[in-house]
Amino acid sequence: SQQGEEDPQALSIQEGENATMNCSYKTSINNLQWYRQNSGRGLVHLILIRSNEREKHSGRLRVTLDTSKKSSSLLITASRAADTASYFCATDVSNDMRFGAGTRLTVKP
Amino acid sequence: NAGVTQTPKFQVLKTGQSMTLQCAQDMNHNSMYWYRQDPGMGLRLIYYSASEGTTDKGEVPNGYNVSRLNKREFSLRLESAAPSQTSVYFCASSEYGPTGELFFGEGSRLTVL
Image (cartoon, rainbow over all chains, first blue to last red; front, top):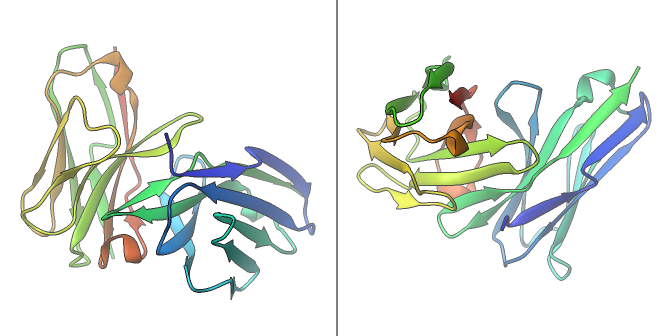
């Protein structure tokens, strides 16, 4: 089974609204990362948060981490049509990275 | 500024045929990874190489072999392809292993008939 699971599986919003995606994981981690994938392309790194951090910002992105609940959230503020993509969380497991199934975000213009 | 390059981008095989997916990175990264992506399953790790000269199994290694040819190159081989191996394959690299950012190639779409 996969280490991380995103929720919801799919999300559809209007341009300008905020989008929140959640990730739950099973084992202890050193860090958690979020990635974005446009249709038919490779994944692109968005942000990394370490286990001793609770919140991190990067532009319109805000990530939180709650290690007691083994969960993280990704907030995209003031969404744009260009934010339409799939978003994945990834956690470190021993020497490798494991990914969740992703959230498919659609931002309507 | 190539980053991670995968070849081929598309391939169609018949059941039982063999093939090798090639991956090369030009960022002098130590760690390299092979993932497969299936609809609704996200990415699943097949094999990884923490550093040159080492390889380890991931979640779904059965039916695959890998070679870390040198620091730049990490190949994935299917010895006897099966329809269940129809997928999109991604290679990735990282300077610091799972503690750092992964850089991905654009993917190789494989269909096994």
